[in-house]
Structure formats: structure tokens, C-alpha cells
Image (cartoon, rainbow, N blue to C red; front, side):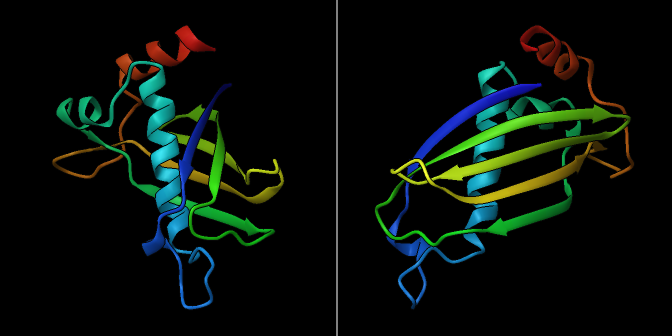
Length: 134
């Protein structure tokens, strides 16, 4: 569907005692990449929240292939794969400076009402932004 590329440097606090990026940081990296994809089509997370919606993650799947370290320049290639009902799916591929795939992941999120956390349809302004960029 829609693809986006997000480039960043690994910060020192993201590493563990072994000197590698701690696995918990991949969640943060992919969340940032996902919202940068949305921002690139004109939808900020702020606009989603201000419109009365939230997007909690309902499922995550990671595959760790290689380690990476402090100050590495990494690239996340994020793909918005599908939207069906209240759910939306993304896939991620994380590459190091040598363009080697070091991690891949998938997430599933659900649109819910901000005040009641009940599943709800994808907001029209989000659907329109996606349709304009497919």
C-alpha cells in the first residue's frame, strides 16, 4: 500500500550491558517510523487523538537477525499493508549502514474511541489521506 523510509541514529541509552541495542527499543523505533509514515501523508498522531481516536497496538511480531550498536545509522522501511474494519497492519524492515537487514517486524493496531476505548471505524480523514497516497 504505502511505504515510507525513516532514518535515525542509535542513541547510547538504547544499548544494554552487552553493548547492543536492547530489544525493547525496537518497539519505540517502529512506533516512530509508523507515525512518520502517517505524517508523510498529512496525518499526525495529534490530529488522530484530537479527533477522538486512539490506536493501541493489538499484536506485534519481531524477527531479530543481527545486532546493532550505539551510533549506528539505521533505516526503517515501513509499509502500511492493509486496513480492514477497525484494524490496520504495518510491516517494518530495519537496515544498517551496509544495507543489511537486521530486524523485521509486523504490528496490528485497532482504532478505538479515545473516551470509551471501544473499537470504531477508521476516521474518514485517515482513509482519505491513505487513498490519496496509494
